[in-house]
Length: 196
Image 1: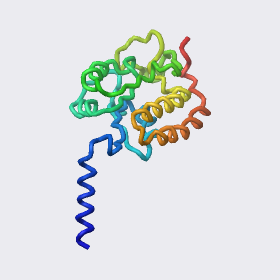
Image 2: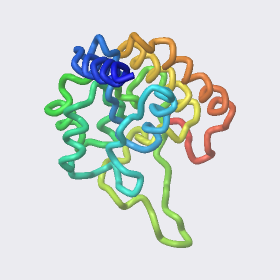
Image 3: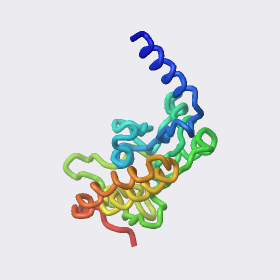
């Protein structure tokens, strides 16, 4: 009976001491904003949990990198972000801290439908889209508002994770389809007009 606990401890120590590729670790993934984090979490369901970089209560347009966020980027195998159009402050840290990580910029992915900027001023309150400064020429970086984009991005994320995680290559794509159908059937909000 005393042999069983000793064998268990020996097996545990052996598993921990094996090189990472032999243990088949799930990639460490960082997502920039909550909508992207939600998509990545769906694709990784049952395998791991992505780390969220910018909390929902914070504006993604301008931020200061905290030490915990810098550590997350340094340890990342994959960073999934909208792109520099939404988080321009993140471009340099990605190059310096997450230089070895694979990076997926969703806004500039070929399957992404670009949305036109719209007037977000609420006349009755006077509140608007003034919490940040960026040029509103061209298309808006808020492309996750179009459900078709979110649906397409599930496949992009699943493909990238399958490539980085061959041991679970079938599970990541299998987790993506459940989101494809409900998202694709949901119409884009009227305010989310496509850019010309």
